[in-house]
Length: 409
Length: 105
Ligand SMILES: Cc1cc2nc3c(=O)[nH]c(=O)nc-3n(C[C@H](O)[C@H](O)[C@H](O)COP(=O)(O)OP(=O)(O)OC[C@H]3O[C@@H](n4cnc5c(N)ncnc54)[C@H](O)[C@@H]3O)c2cc1C
Image (tube, rainbow over all chains, first blue to last red; front, side, top):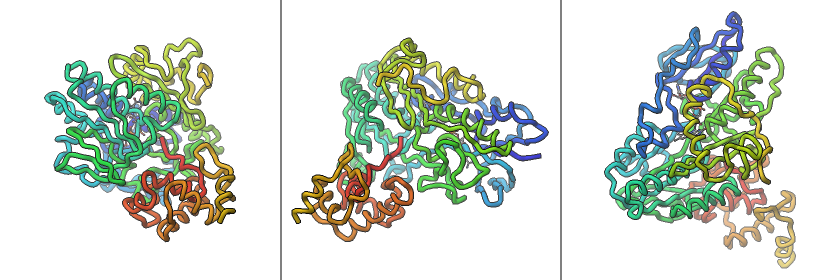
């Protein structure tokens, strides 16, 4: 009996578990999956919590609901991978050997990386919304806040869901308008990038949205430290931005066990072949989702597109053939833009986001790079699709590789 | 001296106004490119970073991020910003005759 071991039961790991479970001969392969938490978090929902749109219960479900019966699921922390010995050590002293390893342990925020970030104002005037704790703390803060300087700051790239910070300020605009205090709130978007977003065309269009919504944009700002007493963030080249409330996207990193295993780059992301999704170093290790070092977005939709390619490549490997399916970097992101509307972008490694219709050329129903009500429904629907299709590994009606049909060049 | 100045003007550039051909680069060209970025003098510390960038690019095919720069070159972030104000990774890549770092999304 051969052993397939999956590390991480988040979006990507759970998706792959379900796909592989249905395809593999149970007399030939034994599947084990490991995660540290019992709870599956719908992370895209964290964005909505500070504004009271979702609550904690809307974004959690037990992980076991998504594990097929007969799968060996272990709740424990991964301590170390020993790729040379084909085995993984867990914190509970268990040792798991494998013939084929799939790594899907995602990325997490690391506020400790910035001087003064996780200090006396942490979760008092400085919040993140990339964790459930941060999102809930911010909700409580906003409930009683009477206005002032709201600063959103991205520490450094890459971050997971690179559109989430923009969505956050769009929703803040909408939320404080609804509360009747928008005129008392200065919203300021402070980014290390040269524009509102990473890709030039989308960056210009999204920059215009910021303008239209009266959100101030500061670019090329690389935060060096937080001054907790003066309440300001200070860049490496001594620019200062004062805040009353700071919403930070801290440095994103892969988990520390990757460092202990000597398998990561300087941010603990694992060097991965960007087409085959196999580890660059080890033949019998594949990697998916946020924990790869791929130059694609770190997003659930991307993990989904990767999963279809990876599935074929892992089956090839198991049958002794070379993996030959190629991932193209496809990403598809609904950007919630406030007041019940949304924007949609679709792109890959080579093609930046372009205007047009999606997924049906000329018809849609979704509009690319435009603000529509339908795009907002797409985002709302995404949660339902996530729980009912995505993590269960079921097919979605979208091609895994990007299509140029419907796009205006 | 005039020949060097002329050289930097006529050398082919890409869309970011970085050198198009890696082979056009030499130390004199670097000095001229630095002037375009308002860096009037390239010190030993500048060269340490520039040489590191070129070495990384040769090995990996992309210029390193700031984080990689500080970790591997031994130059602290603060100093990097002093040496190459505003965007160390971007500016050092340009002066090193490399394309703008791809960065991530
Ligand atoms: C605020 C926010 C908004 C977002 N919005 C969107 C969106 O609109 N659309 C979209 O497509 N994506 C969105 N995303 C991104 C999406 O959630 C992630 O890209 C996706 O979850 C990545 O899947 P993954 O499996 O790689 O990682 P994860 O889903 O994070 O799973 C990683 C798993 O590994 C486990 N793990 C890690 N280390 C260890 C260890 N040492 N031991 C044991 N277990 C471990 C973790 O517990 C976790 O369960 C958003 C993310 C955030 C934070």
